[in-house]
Image (cartoon, rainbow, N blue to C red):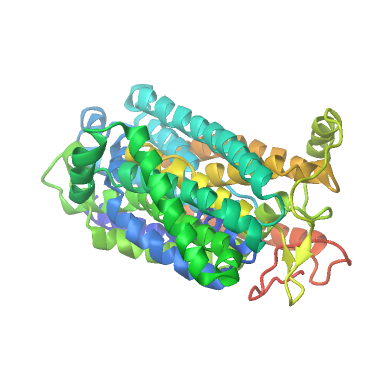
Length: 522
C-alpha cells in the first residue's frame, strides 16, 4: 500500500500540472475576452500581462483555498469510516477530481465552450467523496449549498450590474468613447466610478486580510461613513483624471477607456488568481501533503499551510494554458456571442435558437445604442468598444473579488459571461442581425453548465469507486478512459471547427480571430 500511495501522490502532482493548463485553456481565457474583443491589445500581449496579475493574486488565495480543500466534504470523517485506508481514500478523492476535470475542461475548451472550474470541482468532490466512502454524510451539504447559492447570486449580480452600468454610461457617452469633447465632459466621472469600485471591491474587500489594508479600514471606513468616503474618493479620482486629460489633450481622451479596460483586466486577473487558482491547485497539493505526513490523521494533514511558491508555480502553468489553440476558441466564441456585429460565426442547437427567437420577438425593435460595427486599420473587426470592455472587466473583477473576500470560490467563467451578455443587452446588440444565434448560443452555454455539473459528479463518483477498490488496475482503466475520451472529442471538435469556423469564412461573417492568433478568421 505504501508504494501505491507514493505513486498516487506523485501522479496527483502530474495531474495538477495538467489541470492547471486545462484551466488556462478555458476559465482563464475569460480574462482577456473584453480587452481583445475591443482590440485594445493583441491577444498574446494581453495573455502575458493578465498572467502576471494571476500569479500575483495567487498569494492572497488562502480563504478560498481552505474552502476548496476541506469545505466541500469532511476529510476527518475518512479516519472514522475507512480506518487504516483513510489516507488512500483521501488521495483517491483528490486524484479522481483531476481525472474527471482534465477531460471535461479539455472537451469544453475544444468546442469553444466556457465552463466553470469551480462548479466542476465542487460537484467532482461531492461525487468522489461519496464514491469512496459510500456515505452521504461525508459531504458538507450546507457548505455545498452555500457555494452554489454564491455562484447563482454572483451571476445575477454580474448581470444586473453590467446591464445597469452599461446602459447608464452608454446613455451619457453614446458611441463617442474616443471623441475629445464627449470624453472631456463625461470621461472623468465615468472612469472615476470604475476606478472607485475597483478600489473598493478589489483592495478593501479582496485584500481585507493584508495588514496595511486593515490599517486603512480602521483609520477611515470604520470611523466615517463608507458611502461618504467612496463619494469623496470618486470626486478626487474624477478630478485627477480630468486634470490628466487636460494635460494630455486628444491623445488622453482617445485612450482613456483603453486604460480603464486594461486596469479592469488586471484586476480581474488578480481576482482570478485569488479565486479559481486555489480551486485547481487544491486537490493535488492536498493529496501530496497527506502523503508527506503519514504520522498524522487525514483531517490534520489537510490543515497544513500551502506554500505561496507552489501557488506561483500553478499560476505560471495557467498562463501556459491561456496561450493554447483551444483557449483561442473559447475567446472567439465568447466575444462573438456579445459582438455588436450583425453577423457572427457561432453555433447553437436549433432548439436553443428557436427558444431565443421567442425572446427576440417579445420586444419591439429598438434603436441600437452601441457603436456601429467598425474595423481597425488592418481590417480586424472591433466587437466591443472600449467603454463596454471597461464595464465588462470592472464588473467581473468586482464581483469575483468580493466573493473571494468571503471565502466563496465563485466562477470566473459564469461572472464574465454574464457581464458580456448583460452589457450586450444594455447596448441592445441583440435587437438586430443574428440575435437568435447569439442568444441561442448563450442559452446553450448556460445549459451546458448544468450538464457539466452533473457529469462531473457522476463521473468522479465512478472513477473514485474504481480507483479506491481496484487500486493499480483502477488507475490504468481510468487513465486510459481519460485519454480515450479526450482523443475522441478532440477529433469531433476539430471537425466541428472545420465546418463552422473554416480558415477562410464567407465575406461579412464576423470572428474574433486575433492579429497574432493562428486561427485568424477575420
